[in-house]
Length: 213
Ligand code: DC
Picture (cartoon, helix red, strand yellow):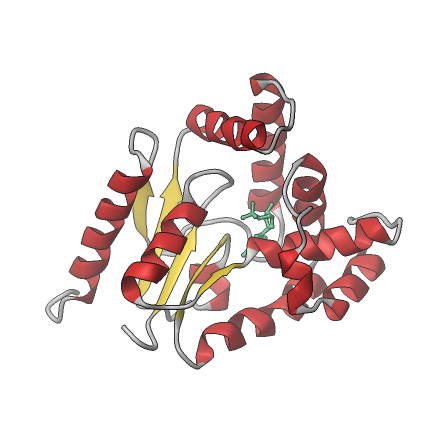
């Protein structure tokens, strides 16, 4: 599988991260959570007391990003979610992070999860998965995740924040969240992590068969 690029795109809390991490182990490929790049950029802006929607501040933060930023412990949670989605709507921020993502997978391939991996970052990737789930299932998963981190929140509030972020990620002019024309769709609403992984592996094996169209 060396050199293979697997794109895993989809909305928040659809199960992309868990799936992409497992696929990377199974296929022996490096894994990159590209959302962390946007999260770390947003965090840098917040640290400096700036507004993540301010293009100049966000561009400077993206340019200053280092691998250590991706290991910060404060990249999850509602403030980081909002900041990431805001910086991600700025075209020059996306351009600055494009090289990072492409060079990550250039040498050995990789599994990358995000919103535009199959459409913009690696449009030529042989394997593209678009992972979705119903808004209700995604809100419940995100709430569960937050409770696991000890954060207090209500389901209605989490669902509304997620709806807003999805709308912003889908409506932006550059690289909006959307399935590539040749992406394989995977709805995880009624599946657990194990079943999602098994279904994805079946889709990938079918796509990589020599007689696949
Ligand atoms: O996958 P995530 O929830 O960690 O992503 C955080 C935000 O970053 C999300 O609201 C949209 C943005 N993002 C993006 O625009 N493109 C990507 N490839 C990955 C994330």
